[in-house]
Length: 265
Image (cartoon, rainbow, N blue to C red):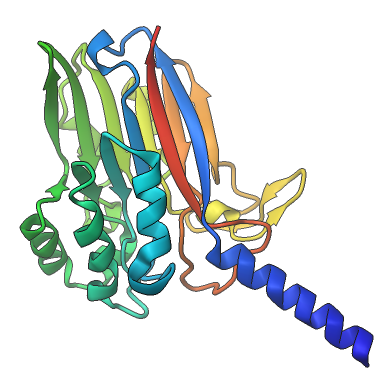
């Protein structure tokens, strides 16, 4: 009986640690298109928080962001969870990190599902967040430019294909915030440079040697769950995210903060 109790305690400890410990993943993106003045630019990607809490007043998450010393912060959707909607809890993070670096945000399916998306956007705008809803911003530095595009989650009624068709092709190095990784081919077809996505929750249960088990929009044994994917000249970074939604536990799938550094070849 005591052995089984010890085993249960060990399993519970592993599961708790694996859902409450944030891992920082570093990714370097190299390209000849990156302007020299943007060489070394650091971006922190926050995805799929789902109203989760990391430390008192989100202190653990905030410290991770501070330690990364980003130039930009990208929030790629599902900041809240439509099943246990607590906007104040998630805004607490934003209020604390907005002074660290400019924040760019796009919706995920859960923001749309609350039917309160306009209020969510309004609150973020009031905090100084750049809310990108199928629009773009040009960032200038020393006379050189990069472009940041934000794609509204398709649950809003506009597909990723249709949203992307509205943007003109330019020579500017283009960063795209789009919640859905399963539409990777759309990004490739539009010759986009780097796409930041989430949504897949790392496959929820990661099987060593095989990857994620299940992801929304992709089903069993999904193709795009975590890390860097490349096709032609398009790169897509998929964050495992931070929180959980319908399935309350992660297994071998630690919550993740992604830190991306741009390197001009």
